[in-house]
Amino acid sequence: MDDCIFCKIARGEIPSYKIYDDDRVIAFLDINPLSKGHTLVLPKQHFVNILDMPEDLYLYMSKIVKRIADNINEKYKPEGIIINQNNGKRAGQEVLHAHIHIKPIYKDTEILCEAPLRKSFSKEEMEKYVKELYLISKEL
Image (cartoon, rainbow, N blue to C red; front, side):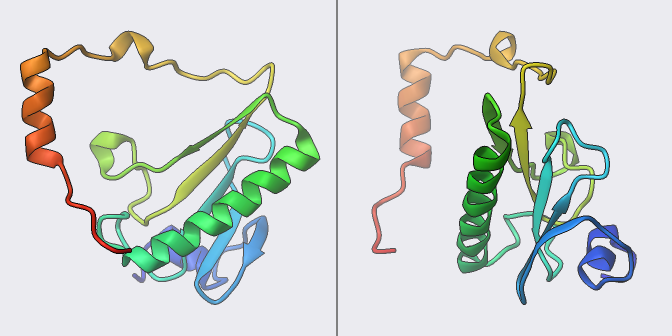
């Protein structure tokens, strides 16, 4: 996509603090990080979010995320690492190009806690959701 900032970064038209690069995926430090080592991992090809992506590409990206998270953990020894991916503006996706965040959490890192926002559903509601969402196992 011509006007997508992440596409421009992937094409090398905009500089970035690149920490990984291959023919399918790029990873770079977030320009407005939550913490030291906050990294974005994204496909070079434009997809709005993971719902648009081929499954094999998402699985490949997940391997890269794991390797980068392991490296951050080894080098910086954070107290934790948040790995998240938002789909759609309402879900917090600011740049409409699929990407995964790797956010190391340190003693001084402020994070939002969603625990007070969680809901409780009845047994009947939960059983209804299971019926609606249950996937029959398929060979992967």
